[in-house]
Image (cartoon, rainbow, N blue to C red):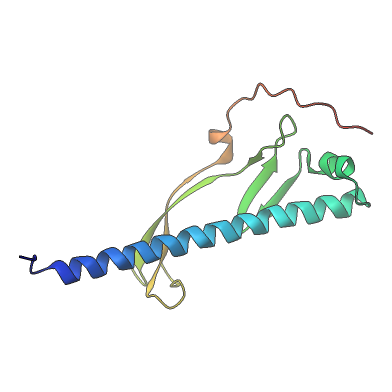
Length: 131
């Protein structure tokens, strides 16, 4: 015998799963944009298509993408960025002012942790870049 609320629960689970997949896809696209922008800037600053010259330009680079300040740590070329935790909310609830793709739901920032608080020391001894 099925639970009388089975259809409602199943629908809610499917909707939640779809929203999570949408968020993960959005996150992947934003990360690709950040990386692309950093590489574009490094290439322009290097003035030539040369891996070592581009890597030197990336080293220590700071840039802003989607409102977040990012930094390429020179020691190991790790991109350091703040951590955001979002909660899905119905549009108009809390600070949600825009929905995602007409769903009626949007993201509300629940927590922001600055990059400085997340940056762990590194023991990486990256090889010196050729001149």
